[in-house]
Amino acid sequence: MIEAEDGEVCLKLLGEQRFDMAFLDVHMPGMTGIEALCRARQQGNQTFVVLMSGQPKSEIVEIARKLEAYDFLAKPFPGGDLIAIFKTYERLVQPVRALLVDDSATVRRVISKIIDQSIFRVTMDEAGTGMQAVDLCDKGRYDVVFLDMNMPDIDGPQTLARLRSKNPNVRVVVNSSEPEENVLRRFGNQRVEIFLKKPFYPKDVDRAMRTVFDLPTPYRIETAAPAPAA
Image 1 (cartoon, rainbow, N blue to C red):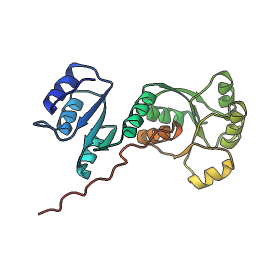
Image 2 (cartoon, rainbow, N blue to C red):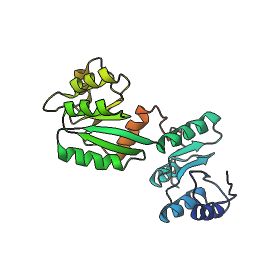
Image 3 (spheres, rainbow, N blue to C red):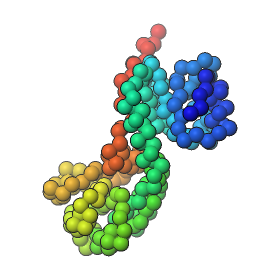
């Protein structure tokens, strides 16, 4: 653990050393934590950052999001919040082996690029049919399967049933352009971890992965409203 007493020292350390994580107070003497993070990001620093403040105003929290701080903690915070942050970081740095199942090569290419932009470290195999997905799962285990609903041989529910017959614990993200209610109804009593409606984006993938791995949602804080204009 290395400590910094103000924003300038913080920025200097971030530029000179590699850190796995950084917890930055918003309010520090001289340069603020927000300013230090902004300059660090401009310099290309991608450290996993959590910002902290005793007065988490909504506009400050929004800036933190734009600067890609992973989370924002309101002081004082319980030790459980820190444990959850550490648990999240441990999962983020572990490789995730995923299988993408979709009959369209173009769609697979687009979704693969989106998943590549996730904060999770995902390595991807692809299947163009449900049976190809079953065959690939016979050969190796996947942490998560991104499963399309409609395919030419066996559909999403049939594919999931076959995957679960071999691995009951397989975690599945169902994606479709159809309404969620209609899609999940076709899966009946089969467990689906989360549904993503096409088109979706990297932040949606992050949300899905947090659900799959039972990680807490960041930015669950109550913010003070902005001061009224004079």
